Image 1 (cartoon, rainbow, N blue to C red):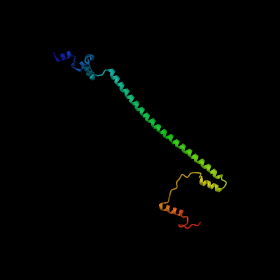
Image 2: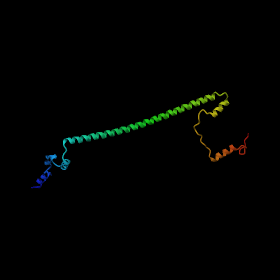
Image 3: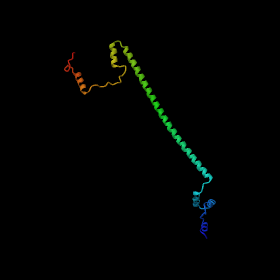
Image 4: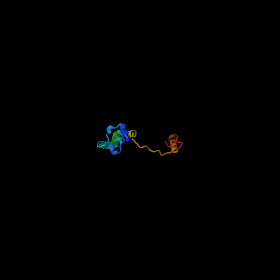
Length: 166
């Protein structure tokens, strides 16, 4: 008996060549040998088609997800721009309302000043109730020494620093 004959009696298959293995009935061998054989065997037409179809579907899904992500990113950018535009419009509306209110207030105060019976009353009202608030702050042009000198002059009631005629 040769080694090949003893191997066939034990249930193991020793093929002579790859072609003889292809003609072998796969279901007749043990599961381990069948897996080894199928791992290196050429796939049949049906599995090849299904693998190619799954690859195509996977690529389509990936490209679809990529395009969805790009579309979402574009929509987020557009939403941000729209939000910025709406905020700018709201600021502009507020500014316009503020300016309109200030103008109406100034007109009303000017009308009150013009309707005073005496010039003295008009001047007094204008001093205590200016038509427009002076938003600009005057810059202080005096340094510390000059400021103390001016304060000393203003506090001098007896006229010791400067001779004042009262």
